Amino acid sequence: MKEQKSLPFSVSLSIFFRSFLIQAVWNYQSLLSVGFAFCLKPVACRLYKDQAARIDFLRRHLGFFNAHPYFASYALGAISRVEEDRQASPEMIDRFRNALIGPLGAIGDQLFWGTIKPGCILFAMIGVLLIDRVHLLVAYFFAMLICYNIPHLLIRVRGIMVGYRQGFDVYKLLNIVQFQNFRIIYRGLGAISLGFVIGFNVLEYGRINPTLSAVFGLSIGGSYIFHKWKHSFYRNALIILTGSVLIGIILENL
Image (cartoon, rainbow, N blue to C red):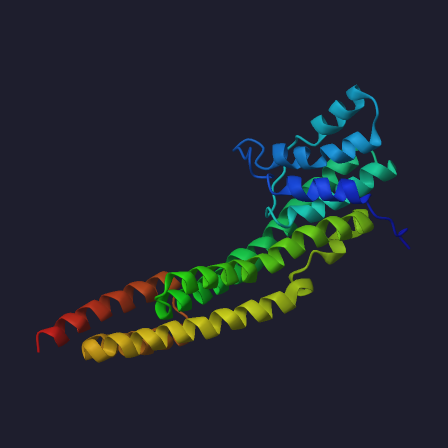
């Protein structure tokens, strides 16, 4: 069983704050590598007193690295642990870092860009539709930021702590199932918000112009039928868009 260890609080805190700048020097040659090495500098200072050894440590971690910026914290914690243990060669650590690129990117994209961010944007749209007072809209905006940043900050903190405890075994935790609760919550939030936004617009604009409601209803029905037939998304979107425009033109000229 892996020994339960933890980074000193000051080092963990330094890595955490530095992780917000991991994309600051993003480039097409090595992507996040400069930011990744910058985040690991407190670890280098802790492990090596000699300046040349620190430089060598940082130079090794300037190699190619990419991941979702929030989930990169798991790699930061794990690399800190394996570097501290000094039981693996630099080549093995490089291979380990490269092996984390795919899982960290895939999970982060699915969870944040595919679920949490759309859910929060739809949630924010409700406030735009319903609130007309500036101070209430500002308060709602901050509530939306809190809603988004709870999982964001939790992933950054948890990634450093858990990654350090697990070391080479961190890959066992890099599965989207581990974050299923977040997916359920924010999918639900997004679905409820989307339903509200659609219903509000149908009622609001349908009252002004019934044609819009008719076209919208036909578009929804057509989308469902084509989805059942499992045609390609782009073909469906083009057919539905074209059909909606034609139906709208016909109804307007009746």
